[in-house]
Amino acid sequence: MITEAIVLAGGLGTRLKAVVTDLPKSLAPVAGRPFLAYLLDHAKKQGIEKFIFALGYKTEQIETFVRKYLPEGTYDLSIEKKPLGTGGAIYKACKQSSSANIIVLNADTYYGISYPQLAGMHEQRKAACTLALKPMKEFERYGAVDLDEENTIRGFREKKYQSSGLINGGVYALRVESFIQKSFTETFSFEKDYLEPECLKGNILGLVSDAYFIDIGVPEDYQRAQQELIAHI
Image 1 (cartoon, helix red, strand yellow):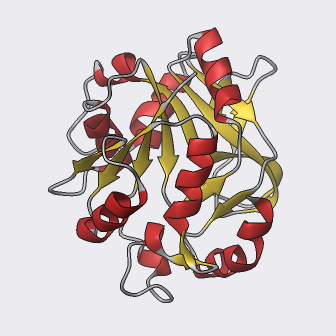
Image 2 (image 1 turned 90 degrees about the horizontal axis):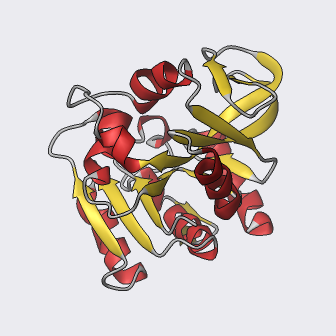
């Protein structure tokens, strides 16, 4: 059981600025509530008791929301003074973790998977990292993930049109100590600089789940979330 999570909420939200001009994208309103509220509600239902928020852009607004929404003592803030990339943000936040394993979430993505199921595979197999993988058809916005019969990830493919495949759903179970013991530059990509090299060693697993998935990072999917999200929570 994993009870601690890192929430990656430091992105600039460049593609969404056309429709959400004055807020970080994690606070973009969906059916009258900040998107982040739905994400935190699901995480709590899945057993998460402590959150570490990795923040950078518009930190004060997210901090204000978190202080009102979560009880004191159930969260910490990991604030970047400069952009560190996904990898640098996770690495910095991991330094504030007291857990052997931690869930990592993208704050602009809702994926209704079972965290205990993800954690169970991760802990049983002693993986370095376990990704939640969403089956998808007719896509080009995401790269595809190659998974073998043992649920070991064997490769990541660049973004291009795919008629069907598995995508990285943006929810991870991560072994904290093995990750922070590695040597990285201060700013790095979690996907390119950690996941891709590590999968060549057979240390990265994938859990396939067809649970509801929505990424509000582009205007068309943000608008779709207004209609769909409440029906799936």
